[in-house]
Image 1 (cartoon, one colour):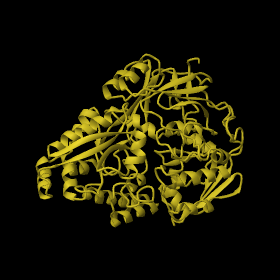
Image 2: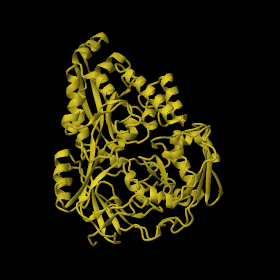
Image 3: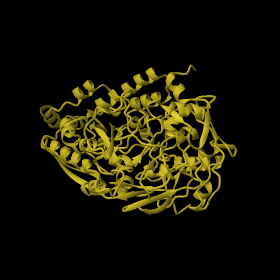
Image 4: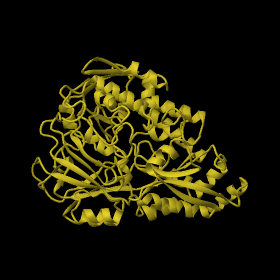
Length: 572
């Protein structure tokens, strides 16, 4: 098979560290931290590929070691187990090593972590060469021990079979089955520094998937010792930092790992995350210098204010975080396409943009608008989603629901993330105009994930899907098997769509894949569900100017893993 440019970028054979440094690209991977971004208006400073564009306030000198920083956080951290928890993924990336990093704009693996290189003789074959000398931190069951291929194997097994893992399709491609017992025999460890496996069939997103923050590598000894106890509130890893204190609803304290494999890194002695779920208080703590890095939801006016202040460094970027209404198509009336259609054109997406995103944002299709290469054109989406109450009422009448109905709209309770409730209120108001009486039911986040979302225990639910920079994951939510391989939580089933989703995941030729992805999205639009996508804005960040990240140094990023090159001029 002739390799396309897309696959060539993914499948770099033995990419050297020198090449990585010249190409640059430190990628800040985060998962549930996205709950605290993605709200606000736009900025002309944003890069075309959606990367963050900082506004340095002044020139800075060479990095220095030492000191600590405090970062605000609007969302409680339920746990820091990279394979099981979804609310602490941004912290997990600092506690554990990963096979490699990822540069989204270039769609390139960055071999700056555990794997020194990846060889792929065939598109289904993966051979990782593990970096010698990556040691666990000096605490815990595997204190000071080297990470080897066996640790990679056991972590892949645990990640691939975990109940709450967000996507099990890649490990199922390796196993050749959804049977979790078939995964382990396919993961091979011929020596301590070689880890290899072959997929049963091609899966284009596979290389990207392993840089996801849910794929942390944990020592096999740690996993065995903690069996039955878990790793949600403890951490024993080989990442740049160690977990010193965990009080997920108050603070999470990290300290420097003296065993970290990159000499002289991390620069910081520690990082403290302070949880304040009331946005105004969180913002005030930042402005009063109690926090070095802002953790509050920044709206456009406040972001502009910070940007004009030389004491702060700000950045903005289009947000991949996207709010979605999910309809349970197993239950009436959402099994009726007329009702789904009526809801779709009754929701006022422009009102959401204006009231929640500061007047600047774009329509999302099944794939978010910042994924410009894969998203449907804005003019097409705006025409399709154009609000039309007259047509919506006619559809409701035709479906036999002219007098409306009552429905519960379940949402996760995130008191520090006001835009979720703001959008839910707009949905409630909009649907009242077509006689749908929506009662908003806020559910505690942990219970929402385990007891509401995953088992499909809802009629309607609204929450922002986590951000993804690859088209496969957003599409997989519509597959009859979902992202777990055991079924989706909305009860939607369309064999034609399943075929398209599977076809794009096997297609390495980029133009051909784009064509299939667009065909799948247009089929989804015509179904008016089970997900009704809304609009997305921009994400904003700010920190005090004595805190420095690699991109502020005026030179190419080092290519080191996320978090290790952050430094501060302030003494501890």
